Length: 385
Image 1 (cartoon, rainbow, N blue to C red):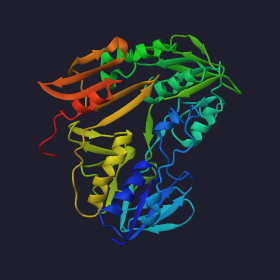
Image 2: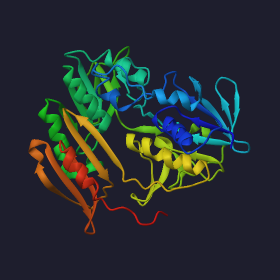
Image 3: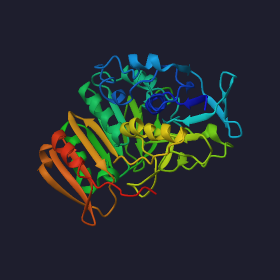
């Protein structure tokens, strides 16, 4: 393999390019990215960067200069020809490769009919964060649609900046799918602790306002005044450009546990990859930072002919209202949850999830040292399918 192309210039793409070099690939290595920016860190976009506390969120290091990457930024991949692994690019060029890494990530999901409405935002990219930051002024009425991680973090940052915040969540409790009912109630309490209005169990019907948003109408008829709206209802994998490539596309690029796609010398990694997970016992598309950092080691090895199943225990964290939330493992409905140490009312505790007598997950709030110790006790799979 003399030429490899990494399509996607975010954390997963950059990490795979680095891993290819570290594992001995010395050929031409092209990185294609649709944004004009050099790779940057996304977690601060809803926290420190949005609050104006972080100016430099770039991911590149001085060591990267010696890795001889051929950057193609501000350029989208339009299609992949499976016969010769050639990429058609938006600048009119055709890039012929011996190996391809698909790391095109995902994009924020909009509420239907809200794109282009002034005052309505999503938060996925650096440009999204810059636009939103200019509107989060003291006293502004902000409605956040969705109480997932992005929504909760934006609500937290906006409260810090002095906004009047309302969060709307269609589920009965925030983060109950990730943490279960008991600890979803604790997450609801976090919002209340900091003066955020939390409305649950109801969906948004529409955004009202012609030139600019003025309110959010709910399915039950209520109208919530809003000068700014942030939509945080999940993400859509960027796979449309792969139509006709022969790849299996099902809520992402389908891969095995080693990131292999079924097309020779084509792997997928990061948010766009619907990979087999030995922990979830099935296909899983992880959108977390740790996966985008660790999975590329597996993808690079597979592309270089040494497939190694990705076995890391899933891990993610979130910072909300000054509270560090950490979770490792995979929770399923029916798991038994118990608080092992600390106090949920004080937002400082560690809880464990058990299934058939086995520890399968741990959740902590403001207990980083305790969490690190218990995280190591999570069961590891013996055989990777």
